[in-house]
Amino acid sequence: MDLSGHSALVTGAGRRLGRAFAEGLAARGAAIAVHYGGSAAGAEAVARAAGRLGRPALALQADLADPSQATSLVERAAAGLGGLDILVNSAAIFEPGGLLETDLAAWERHLSINLTAPFLLSQAFARHRAGRPGAIVNLLDWRALRPGADHFAYTVSKAALAAMTKSLAISLAPSIRVNGLALGAILPPEGEPRDPEQILERLPAGRWGTVEEAVDALLFLVGGSDFVTGAILHLDGGRQLA
Ligand SMILES: NC(=O)c1ccc[n+]([C@@H]2O[C@H](COP(=O)([O-])OP(=O)(O)OC[C@H]3O[C@@H](n4cnc5c(N)ncnc54)[C@H](OP(=O)(O)O)[C@@H]3O)[C@@H](O)[C@H]2O)c1
Image (cartoon, rainbow, N blue to C red):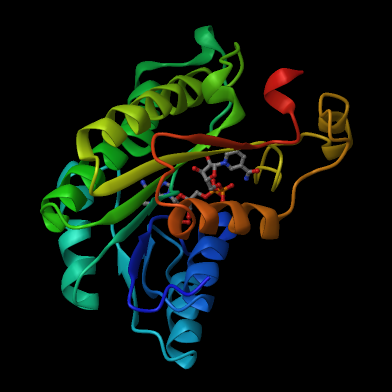
């Protein structure tokens, strides 16, 4: 896949999966805006490495809990790269807690970062594209399509993001394609004392997915068939069925 001539903004790209998505896009030739919240060193390293590959690249800080910072991020990226035609909404928070443990602050935090920020970024991106082609990928979770009781606020935020993915696909067709990538167990959450072996018991595939598989799936949604829009691709080893 050759993405040279394209420019991408990846949110939450200073570490973990967002970083791998940014590196994967840059490796295929895209110019890259590497957004971060607190992971400045990681984001700057990604931008420097992309620069060494000859790609225009910059690291941009924004707190996505702040609507004005989320809204202005697209124009900052477009100004820095000379345009933007790919948006990957990867930044998110994932806090534990069922219904009774979820206080209003946690609820609002999840909705603002996981749902309102992708909404504002997508709206700003659509305005920037002004009818020209583009692609948006929203990072989802198998829980989005099969909500349960755990991670209550997170799950509801991702379920709403799955619904928004489809509404955006219709709203922005035919110029901008909008798809969702619903991940299962790829990287264990930081700071959550869960045994990776225990998760395997509920995984039909019998193994964790790899970061490379997640990057490949993202690249397909970004640069594969332009007949694919409004789709939600599950990369979850069958978890949503189990
Ligand atoms: N890991 C998995 O196996 C898995 C499974 C299912 C779904 N997913 C989804 O895939 C995506 C990436 O997953 P991940 O595990 O790599 O995520 P992660 O480790 O939780 O990273 C979260 C990212 O979001 C950014 N972020 C959080 N709050 C922010 C804020 N207020 N402002 C700006 N940035 C903020 C962080 O940026 P800074 O570090 O710069 O602050 C960080 O880069 C997420 O949408 C997640 O829900 C992942």
